[in-house]
Image 1 (cartoon, rainbow, N blue to C red):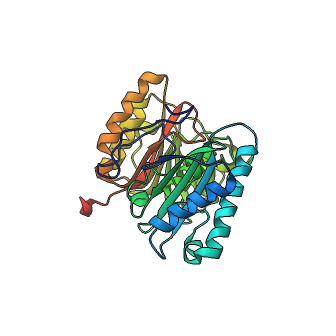
Image 2 (tube, one colour):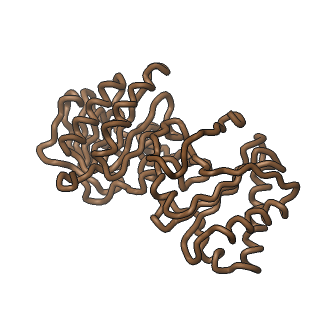
Image 3 (cartoon, rainbow, N blue to C red):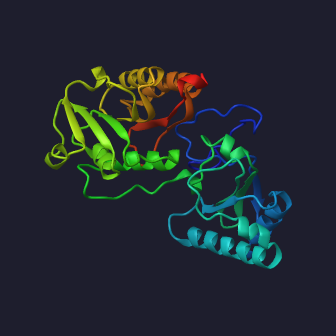
Length: 320
């Protein structure tokens, strides 16, 4: 452990297939420890690193974030470092400044990522991940600084659980779209259904208890009263949504069954824990799902409590 919340790993980069690290929000590939006494010195170090290593005319992102203190001093210092670097690029290397993308929500194969994590005002870790590594290792390397996504706030849904679905969509880089078909298992009181209906989707909500009254009246909602674990759609749908309260092995088994049978093209499913001993049960998902999916993430969201979230896109049958 380097500092609270910061762990050094011997993971080879990028020689081996990326593992699924459920409780790791961000990875700094090939991070080098640096010491710089001032904002100017930090911006000079960043400038030398990006000019020497980044490909010409390819998009890149920059994260300069603090990992010390609890006030605004670290955030202000990081902002000054970034502004000073941009000033250097404006004067000395405009092509890199033009290629800098402010806030991408997903990586393209041509995308590079530069990260500076300050562990103190004069100490930090500098990481330069060249394309296509951020795209190839997108399960480990997040386009969001420190891998953190602000938890969505909205008083209109039936509960705060809606924020988990919104965050999963952001991390996946894919949203429920108008005209999509969704199955929401264990839907009551209806927060995930609310999100899907707001997007213009059609929803089949399955639960023993009804949803909030206004959702039950919605013309694009079909409510099926019953057991979420025994429901099977008549035909494949665009999205499987499941935030049901259940033992982790039951939710894991449900997700694997839906993906293997290709009942849904995309999925967002929470896995709820009773204790730390349940973490090991995620190993089955880590082994079984990647070959079945074009995209697969298994992570503890910022909006999660004692749970993790599996989300992804299922590989079509013809792709193997």
